[in-house]
Length: 461
Image 1 (cartoon, helix red, strand yellow):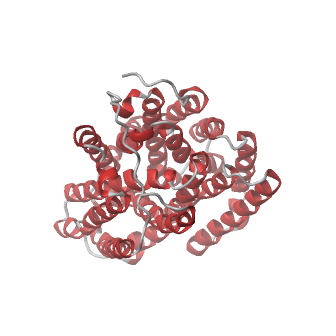
Image 2 (tube, rainbow, N blue to C red):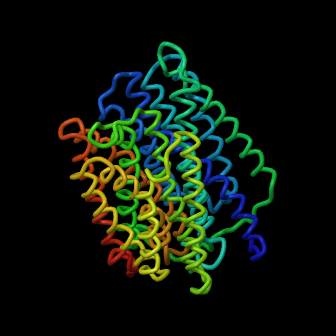
Image 3 (tube, rainbow, N blue to C red):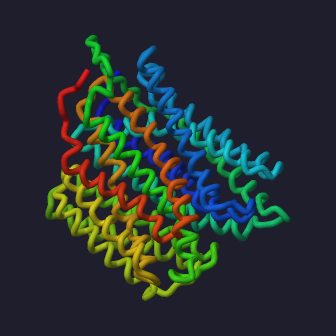
């Protein structure tokens, strides 16, 4: 069924609530890692199994979807994007609800199982929601729309550590085990997911179906080299972003860095994920068709407003001085200049934004104090446009294989399951700082994908 252009705005506004929710919940893993590490007396490697359990579900979910789409046709194209989103919300709600018995039985393995179910739900949401946003409008503005939606995802990841850190480390941190403090927060999330499910069920969303080609493409989406290279890029980007976020509390807590407590350090995670929020909102403007004379002044205003929001949110939690976070303003300037240099081109912008984290990681690994801390925190603002730009570059030109290609990309979110434990293993042997070599190598590949790897080539059956 065809939809009119007037439907786009309302549909996109509804979808932003989804992006916000899964951003908010996903980032709580960064709080769970140091919390459960202490509760169950885990090594860094064992603690990183939290991310392994959560993100491995993306691989399982994406793989099953890919197999079904190859043997029986694209499920989302059959049932519709709306029903796919509803299914994802239901499974996600089951996952958050399982935190209650996990805490009651005081079993780390049960927590990992609950996270796996939660990850399966988010995998379905990713498969349905990302291509839905990408195709709700002109193809050339797909990256702009995804950046806008991902901006609200990042708003969730910005306030998630602050609210989650307060609830888990302090407000609900009662009982002998300490595991009990996660019960009420995750039951609250269960209710919120179910309410969102009911709301989306009741409101009309346009049904969009891709035309099914009569010609067989053999390997399907995997016949396209740029999609396969894009899958690797997603693997490394998600893995790097999650690995960095997973270590922030422990990194900032090092005596050689800032020596903060877990509760205090958790608030500063907002600068890492908040940077992604700033960059994604700017990306939506930069990649839009707005005139340059209006575009760049608006980007400057939005970046300052978003920074003010992050500052006041963190200040309300930690009571920090403005002068202490002044270095972050430098990243705003660099980010703004990077967008100008990117010239609103998705591939060029991706390359530029991958180069900055390489430099910042080197500084974070080999310096100490504020320089090291802010270098790592500043990476978030350059992570901002990577998901949306990689995603839209990878599915470009796939035609009726678009949803299948989306499932492949979602499958490779498994990087978030693999890279954190690898970094955790290194951290156990060579220390937290030097373990950041893992994400550093990932950004080298991402720079290449934006430079050469994204180029659309003839499919190879």
